[in-house]
Length: 316
Image (cartoon, rainbow, N blue to C red; front, side):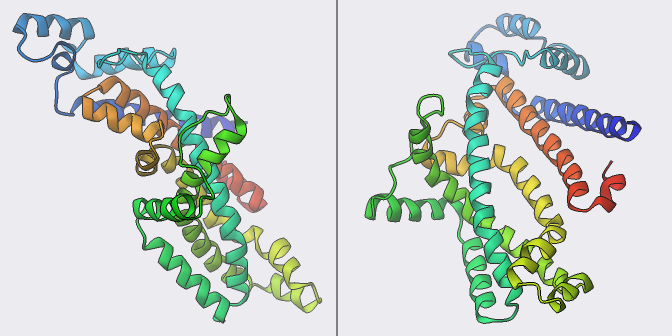
């Protein structure tokens, strides 16, 4: 219990530092929220009055504490750009889009990467290994926006296998949602699959040289069983780490894919708000993304304990 409480204390401390860092960085951005709300050319007294109403005339630490107190109760403020919507409502609408894209993309990436890595590692130095490694480097060398354009041209325009992506929420239609989300998810999945394949293949190669794997082979265990039951689990540490980092990062960094397919996710929300000088949305969205990133990577420590019981004490 002490170990769990210590881990929770570390999580709270990191989130507090992240929240203050986010608030301070946004406060240093150029632009005046009062000018964004009232527009240019107003008398200085009107700007000063609005500064006082918004608390912008207070010291940075006081403004942060006021904002944090509201954030802890679910109040992230209101947008300073018409139509002046609630920040939490905007985030609640955008977050499921990015989460679904990230989870679906990483799931597809794992389905592609794990079999390729197993074959590549088992046939180390062979033709299959060279072909897979070459394909991995080829995919990693193609930018995401170019990958998306090529897939749209091939799968939508030429072959007609998929509809043009437009966002349909799960609550409206599950089949419609998946049919339109699959293409953006594939664009996300391909570079992640290439990275996962490379990471897992290298760890599998080392694991296949371990004594317990050699003993399993000497006992006549089939190759597929050796790979899946003996080698895969202890070779997954680096993959789990990369997977956790990728999931946390993708939630806020899918802006290229979201822009390419006109999807209303977190990346598009932050970029649009920043270009309009809508600082409350930038603060709130960045805080949520950072908090999810920290929580996800803290959960990765617990997964280490499942993969290898010897690390449970260290993970806690």
